[in-house]
Length: 170
Image (cartoon, rainbow, N blue to C red):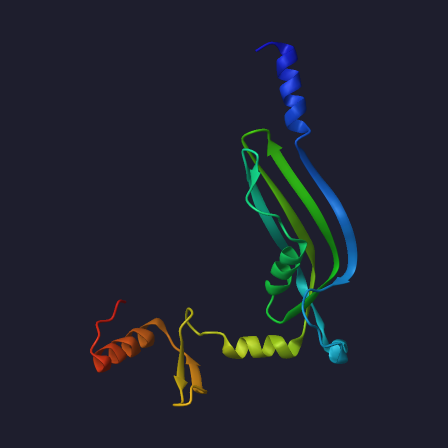
């Protein structure tokens, strides 16, 4: 490969990547926020980042990235999160011509937490893993629910399998 071809190839690859700062924001949300008790909202101590990315394979994108999805992911990364404050939204992409690329939105900000939502999240959070036992009434409404350990879950599923005459798949 001669020197001119190498320089031209490097130039094309370097121009195939870009990051653009789209907006700096004071507050942004994709959630329905009850502003009547906004004075009780707290700032989370750490900044959160949300990303929505799509790949480009040869010439074909696998989808279109969404800034809303990036904001949702950042807010939902903190229990009780309702909005982002003091943040930035960027769009970036890279593309190696006719091979592979990626385009994405990235949002970074401080999550604003509604303490009443955070408290309800922690009350329903499972103790060990993701095992919650829900007892239903005959009409289909929830009679009770509780978190259980892996061991308790295994015992309960074995009892249900035995009572129904089926074999447990666990």
